[in-house]
Structures are given as structure tokens and as C-alpha cells.
Image 1 (cartoon, rainbow, N blue to C red):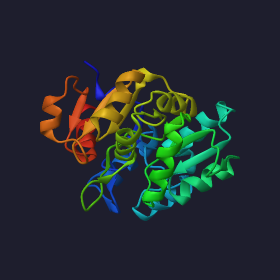
Image 2: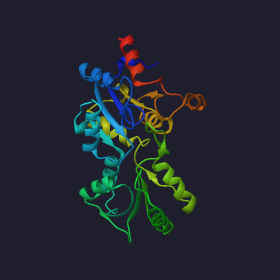
Image 3: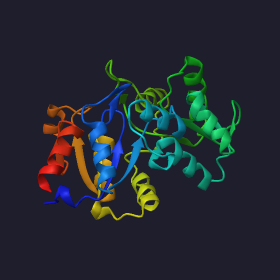
Image 4: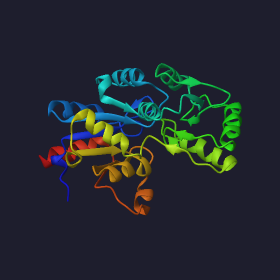
Length: 263
């Protein structure tokens, strides 16, 4: 059995784990301060590409959590890195918010309506029927198809809202096609994080609120899996899951209490 006191590095989901919408979750600030004071390494993970790193840094700051830009890794960043490695994907048709489109342009990609090299979809709060219609057309032409993340919903203080995975399901109903997902649960995100932090899997834990992204990625990458029930996953869903996380807590507040008790 893994011991939680042996974890020296925490990879932290944000939505549903540290905050819900614009509301900080109980114990989140104290947990981050504890990690800092005990010299434990940490990195924030998110599958939500609607904000860039600077925007996430500002949001965390407003919630009372001060971190550097280097301590944040988004599925948008991971997608950009993937696209850079695949040099045939230069011209993109996107179903994405302006903030992520700006990141793509800054990284050197062309956003086009005609003759794309690939269709790229993400969590898009500016979604329109025209975007869906155009994406359907290109997918039916066999154009390569990429998505930032498979999350069906994004938790907010007012309840869950449709995420990238729901858009992908709609497009699957129209085209029969599934995208290649780049963000969680792709273990490449954890591999990127371990390189950034110079850490080993046996000393690292993934903390998140989703079984099919956060926990699945932890399983695939061989790091300790810590589920919090403060976001999407319910106790009933956990009970029905074939594979259970290494640790389960109601919140990061209870996680911190457990770490303190184990020291």
C-alpha cells in the first residue's frame, strides 16, 4: 500500500479540485501553502484551454493562491506541443474559443476555413452552429481530427456545463469519427510534468475529481492516484468504477489533514 506521506510531488487538477468556477474550495489555499512550506513540488493541470497560462495565473492569484507561470500546464499547451511535433498540421480549422485560437496563432499555426490540414476542437464557450456545420463537413472529408480533452462536462459553481467531450460526441453522431485526444488522460501530460519538475513517478501523485481523465491518466502513467469528491465524480460513480484510486477524500482539505496525520 502506498503511503501518502512519501509523496514529494503533487500534480493538481483545478476545476472541481481547487475551485469551482470562481469559488475557491475549502482547504485549497492551506493545501498549497503546506506544499510550499514543506518544499514539496507541485504543478497545476487543467483540461480547460479557454484560458492561457497568464489568465490561469491571474485567476489563482485572485483566489489567494500565488504561483509562477511555470507551475501551470494546460491541455492547450500540450496540444500545441503535439501539433509542433507533427509538422504536416500547419493549417487548422478550429472549434475553439478566441483565447485558445490566439495561443495557436502565436505558436505559428494558421487558422483557416478552407482546406485545413486538421480539425481541432476544444472546450468552446463561443460554440456556434456554423462551427459545428463546418467541422462536420471537413470531418466527412477525412481530415485528421484532434481534440484537446475528453471531458464531458466542466464543473462550475452553478453546476456542470458541456465540455469538449460533449462536442466530440455531437460530431461523432454526425460523422462517426472520434478525435485523437491530447490532454488528460493521455499520460504524455504527466510525462511532460515529470520532466519539468525533474521528478520520478514513484514520488508523484495526481490529484483530481474525475475518474475517466485525472485518475485514468494517473493509472496509465504509474503515479499515485488521489480522487477528491468535490467536483464531478460522485460516491455512487466511484462505487461502480472497476478500478479504484489509491486514495479518496471528500476534498483537498481532508487530503491535507491526512498528510498531517501521517507525518
